[in-house]
Image (cartoon, rainbow, N blue to C red; front, side, top):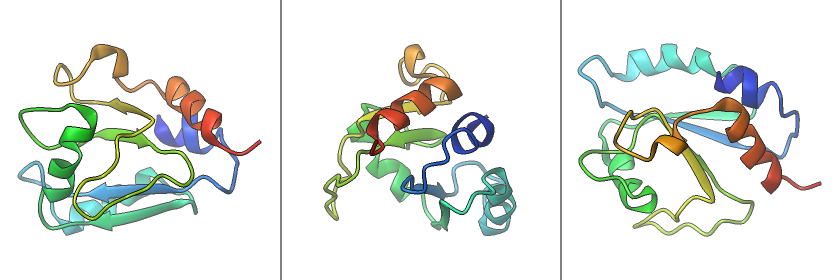
Length: 123
């Protein structure tokens, strides 16, 4: 869905996508993360494997998530968003696939995600 409704639909070369893979489920490991990179065969996507759920934990507060790390989330930041080492900034927009742990109106919808991204790209 994200590949077809967002990445393939938005040709803007200024779009940068960072996919972070981390161990959330028992089957999550570096090998499975390398296989998962095939989900986003786009030159604008940079994939990262981290060996702990620390990244997901860091994003809990900025999106208002309690009860576990943020994963299967899609965070949208404007160009020039300021980052610090300790806490990531609140995203301009986000969507998720966490079923009931975040608002239902933020459940992943590729067309809504693409629309939010387009609003932040240079014209």
